[in-house]
Length: 242
Image (cartoon, rainbow, N blue to C red):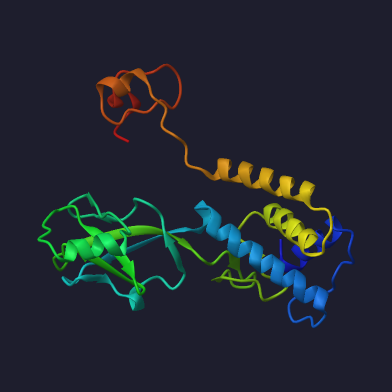
């Protein structure tokens, strides 16, 4: 749904007049609903690690403490996805982001390990111990861009054109925006709050990665998974490694 269609749906839900335009409209009501929609979209982007907003950044270490400078960070970076930062050459997890307290503790002691730690400070990623030049690293992150420009498919962080499209679930944006509008207007909002929470819970459950299912083979063989049929004794029975 576009920005305008989302705004119209909110108007329908709250028994308000349907706006003809939203972006660029000087009417205070239109400006208010635009602000609410963008506030809701940003909050929803931050509240959960949505698959549709997940991205990967891969790069090569240059041999200095600043593993990735702020100027080289993805322009749409919002936050790291936990435990996705890896040294892909040695297959070791890079732990972090650690606190400033832990970081300064590492700086005053001799810390030598394959298991590197990183801090995110001033937009830079710094590591201890320092990576050798040429090491391949990668992490996943959540993009702050929850909107697409309909005409070009270009992502951005807020709705500014009536034809902009939400990458997040439209009905969730509508439900949360309805609750926010009712609350701001001093109208009864408890039912809307419950509806919004129920929808958020349902969508985050649906969006979550599938959990591993233990099978008899898991006890005896590495990496076995039960996809269908009776449990099998080894991963070879599934036709290969997973």
